Image: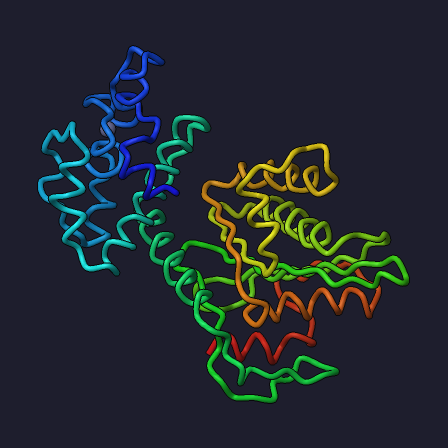
Length: 312
Ligand SMILES: [Zn+2]
C-alpha cells in the first residue's frame, strides 16, 4: 500500500497538500529549511543523514532537489536488486511514520531505531512468509522441548524490547488466561506476566485483551521502544484498519491503540503460532494455576526450557 502510494507520489507531504489547495506552507516540518517534497520527506531531509548512513544504501545525492519523485524512482529505485528495494521501501515507510510521529506527537524517533526497525520488520515478514518448521514439537504437559530444531523466535535489535503476548480460553468455565514475556536483544527475559480473568470472550477479544494488558504493563515499567508480536492476524489487521468503536473488539483495540501511542516507538506484528510458544505457555499457566502475577525481573519455571531454547 505504501509502495503504491509513493510510486503514485501520493503521500500527504506539505508540497502535495499545497498542490491540492489544502495548505499554503510547503516547508519541511522537521528541518524547517527546505520544501517537503516526497523525495525530501523520505530521503533527502538533513534530519535523515544518520538513516541514510546506517541503511548503507546510496540513492544519488540525497541533498539534490528532486521535485519529481517519478524520476527518482526510475533512476534510483527501479535498478535496485529486489532485496535492497524491499529494505529501502520498509525504511522509507518507517521514515514517514517517524515524520508523522514528530508532527502529530512532537516525538522524534532516533535514526538507528528507524533503520533497525526496518531490518527487523523485513526479516520477520520474510520469516513468517515461509512454511513453518514442523520439527518444533512441544511436550504435552510441560514446556519441555522434545525436538532439537532451530528456534524461529527472532530477538529485537539493541534498544528495543520485544513483547510476545497470547491468550488461552476456557470457555465452558468462563475463564481466560493472558500471558506476556518481554525480552531484550540477547533473548534475556526482562519481565513476564500472567493474568487470570473471569468472563467469556471470543478468541479475538481475548488476544486483544492480552495486548492491552501487556501494553499497560510496559507503560508502567517505563519501556520506550517496544515491539509487540503475537499470533492473531485478524487483530493485527483490525488494528491497522481502524475497526469501528461500536464493537467490543473495537473498544479493546482502541484502548490498546491509546497505550501504543504513548511509547517513543512501537510496532505490532503477526507471527506464526510456533514462534509464540512462550507467551502461549504463560497464558495456559494463568488458566491452570488461576493466577495473576508479574515477574519483574524473571519468569515462572514452566517457560524456562523454552526461553533457553529460543535464546540459542
Ligand atoms: Zn526536512
